[in-house]
Length: 171
Figure 1 (cartoon, rainbow, N blue to C red):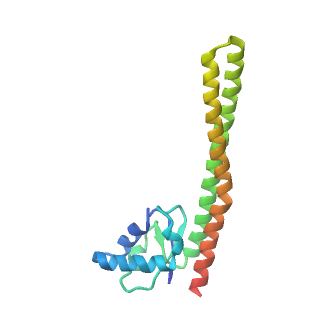
Figure 2 (figure 1 turned 45 degrees about the vertical axis):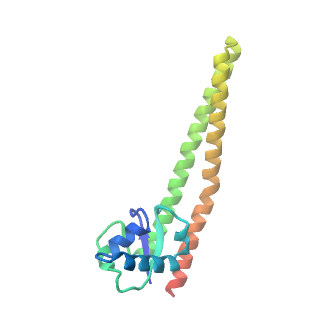
Figure 3 (figure 1 turned 135 degrees about the vertical axis):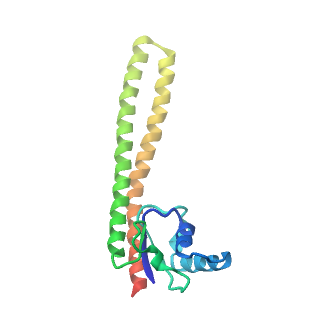
């Protein structure tokens, strides 16, 4: 079995096409099934996320040399390091998303306070309606921020769990 850390491939089919040049569709399906059998977590994933790790089955049809000297996939002894870096990178991406959402929420909150003040001072119906719209936008952004915050530990745990399973399978 080979550990593979993927950083630019979009999905399993794209990766397998790169590894399996000149295979007929039936052989490609067989290799895909073998890969999914040892990587059940890929069944529920759509596109790969940064740092996605998979194990490749030991099949003669896999041309692992097709991966050498390329930046997107690595099956060399450096794979463990790539996986760890993938987990760190994905965590940083989630944290950046959380910070961006926090800034949007703060900006929306300031605008909302300003609009509410303006609507009270001018007794403007339009400003009151606009303030309500901003309030709903603020709530949506808060929900998105909370979701990102809550998903961060789960996402990292999944990546670490995948690494643990892959390492067990190598033994």
